[in-house]
Image 1 (cartoon, rainbow, N blue to C red):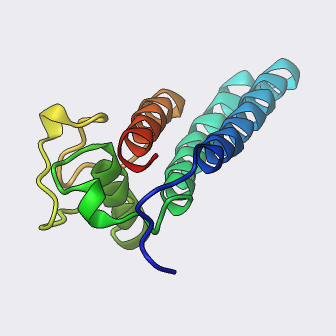
Image 2 (image 1 turned 45 degrees about the vertical axis):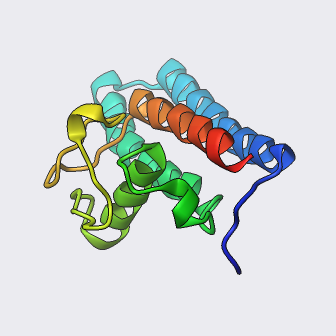
Length: 144
């Protein structure tokens, strides 16, 4: 597929809706499990373990929905699109440890999630919501 310079608002809305549906399913699962769980300590431990796997995978989905976006429009200034790109490469190729991308100028203090090179990527729901909202704001600003 060729690079994408523009996404329709319909496509952006459908992608946002798809992720929101998965977030809703996650919340329903956790809420239901906590209501019926007999060993709360064991259940909470299982949920915490699942949470980072789920939300790390959700960031992979987030990137995949817009994988063909044009890099020239995305820029390389450490914006939320770059941050997601770096996290995805690190999740896929560096065992969840944030690795450098020499083509992107990253400043952890200005990033959404404040990860530094070498940090373990272990997203929770709040982290994902921050990067999800920032990512879509940047997609709409640059590609719609």
